[in-house]
Length: 114
Image (cartoon, rainbow, N blue to C red; front, side, top):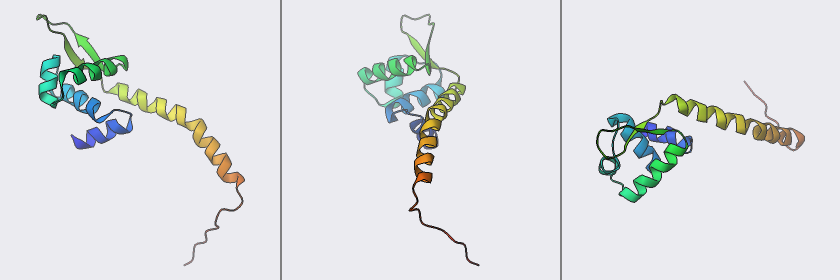
């Protein structure tokens, strides 16, 4: 699971958000108490994390016959959309940085010797 946490962190997830997301992904629909127990996080923190991940579209509410609300992970393909968004937002910045790089004349010259 650590490799998944690393990827999620690079996509902007906090460590806590990653653990909740991965717990729901692995275990299916759960209520807040179950998520708190599975992740070891306190319930108030889990409520906050669920709210954040729901706002981002990564977690959805599923109907339950019980009075408790159940939460489920949305399709992980949404993570690709987030990655594409990061790339789209980063491209102009990287182009600007490249422009600044090429304007500087004091770059070291590299040569390859055999």
